[in-house]
Amino acid sequence: METPGLRVGVNGSGYVIERLITSLPFGRAQIVRTYDLLNIWNFTQRFLFPRTPGTAFANCFHCDLGLNRVRLLHLVNTISCSPTPWIVSYEHYLPRWNVSSDFGLRLLAKTACRRVIAISQYALDEMNESLRHSPYRDAILSKTIRINPPQPLLVRSAREKAVLPGPVTFAFVGRDFFRKGGLEVLHAFARLKQERRQFHLHLVTTFGYGDYASRSTSDHLRKARKAIETLGDRVSVHRHIPNPAVLNLLRRSHVGLLPTYDDTYGFSVLESQAAGCPVITTDVCVMSEINDPRIGWVIPIPQTERKVALRSTDQHLRNISAAIEEGVYAAASEAIRNPSLVVAKADGALDRISREHDPLSIMRRTEEVYFEALA
Image (cartoon, rainbow, N blue to C red):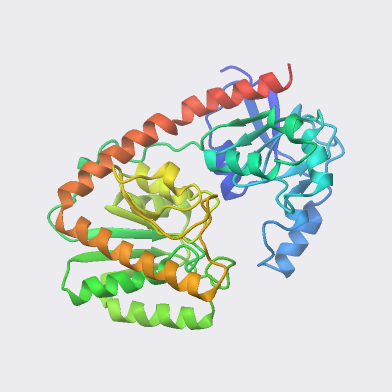
């Protein structure tokens, strides 16, 4: 077996880092976890204040003073002041603590930062827009590229899954239940139950509320619990299950759900599509890049030119909620009426995943970036 020739350090072991880096089948690179001066503070902060936002400075700044024995750092959503050469993959914008931070932009422009990797065209466009009037624009954009997240296929064909006979099975996956359209999903399926439609709904969530997008409250949680009671045995709630169990659940489902108000990416869409589940999504942020009417269902909601939902007023939020509920209801109704359409869309989704998110191709491109960065 070939000995890896390049040690690359990553800034943690979280879900997004695993999705983008450590799950890749590297051949010439060895990925190791690094530690920096903010680790202790990060641990303490998350223990004392578990709802600290991911945009907090300590969560997206790296400072190891060159103490880690690696030749290159590959960070996610994080900027480094390390003398060790580094690259960064990001979901939405950088610097994550403040897109206009002169300190952060200067670090991105310096030569120690070798590559900036957007994981979507949406993220690339956001970087272009945020740097429009910045003196660091050329230095940063000259090393900015795009690499899609990897996603292995979880089934080879939608025909591996028993769509008929029996009810169509839907799966919603998302910790921030209300930001991702969970309450609207429940209301739409309550209508379907009243019409005696045959379905089963799985919810994988902790029912988190109080997010920045839906601005949900305990009253929303009360409404969600009431709707779940109304659905009875048509719904199954999974509060704490590991990701492998989530993937197995998607393999047993037929249609995915992520009708989100706002999302930096939406990895559950990739996982659903890879499991042969066409997905019902909105069209904000990155959603229109990873889903379209040929391979799923897309719900248009009021938004700005930069694909951000119009949600600054209570009326805006009501408009979004109404559009999501009606869109989920219409799409789910079509899926229940026409299971063969579900199969056709699922095969299209599997084809898209295999073409645009193949882990082996993305690993090779990422390794090229590593060695280019040190050339």
